Length: 326
Image 1 (cartoon, rainbow, N blue to C red):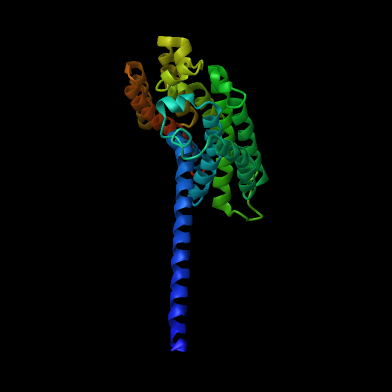
Image 2 (cartoon, rainbow, N blue to C red; image 1 turned 135 degrees about the vertical axis):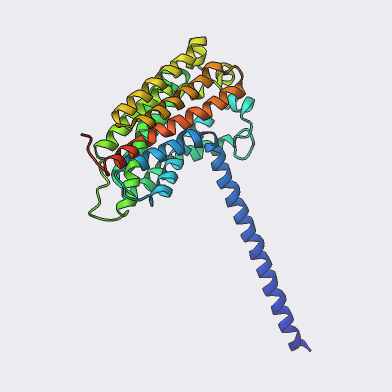
């Protein structure tokens, strides 16, 4: 009778182990998904303003023949943006506590101390990840980290000229890295004969002009955030220039549109469409009065910005993949 009880004891033990492992696995999966969603929330507001435009810039500017590198580019840009957003959201949480309560720190998904630890761990972590592509990609990531510190920890974000300058320089660093990764994935990540070190002339010009566009129009995001910026003492363009601030965005958008169409030798029909888009997006800012209206205007600004960054691809297609401008 005693011997007959052994199988039952064994079965019960096995079932207990299985149930325990099941609960442990479920706990791990839940914790991992919670953490990943927390990371997403740090970046959520900047997906359309940074991840999408710069990923498009990388794919459009690089002399590639296919798009296998898109996931690589998106992930690399997302991770670099993450260190900026975590840094920015740990500097001063008063604005988030007022109008962005869904962000991880005010939502209590992560403590302020944990966010600071994450912020500084991301710099070496993302740099090492970038090294898997090339040393130059790692340098681009580290350079972006320097501009992040200038913008956030050194409080460049409080003054419109420093904010626009550091945003433009940071954008150039991200654009450079995105182009290198797009080329790496197209040629083969670990292909010894692949050149991941330097973009060609089209890509270089694209990075330079795109960063200048961003530096001179990035305050398009500040109109919808004016109340929060004013509350914490920032001196953004909408606050400093008042009613004239809208024209500091509207006019550059039109000028950049005309200049890009000429530089990338865009055909007449496409040029008219792009200029019309700039006029339409800019007019939303001129007529906007409420936060909601500025949010709509900002969406259209990002549509225009993404189209602007895609123009090098138009040039390459029109010139059969040319790598040097004539």
